[in-house]
Image (cartoon, rainbow, N blue to C red; front, side, top):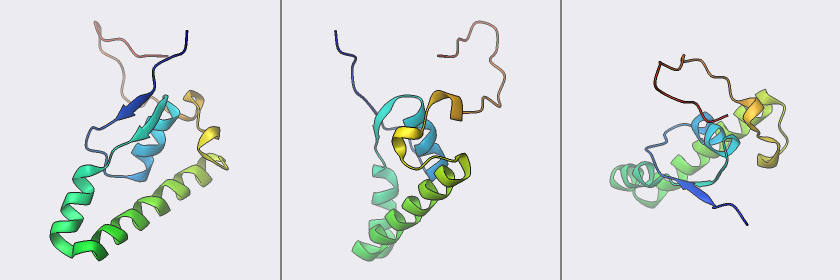
Length: 92
């Protein structure tokens, strides 16, 4: 049985957040809010600029993690900095 493909849409604003979602198994990350804000403020050029900044942030994050491509992002590249409270479960 094949697993489900996961697309995350939860207000991602930084490249590191995109990398984290991909490392935890997301197939794609939606960035609609960023695009809407960029379009409202700067038109098509604003959207292009936001996408370029996000691409650079993803690339920098992957470089800092030693990952050559998104396939190299794994659960092991995610650092759990917030302790999990009793009654909540982390997906490992």
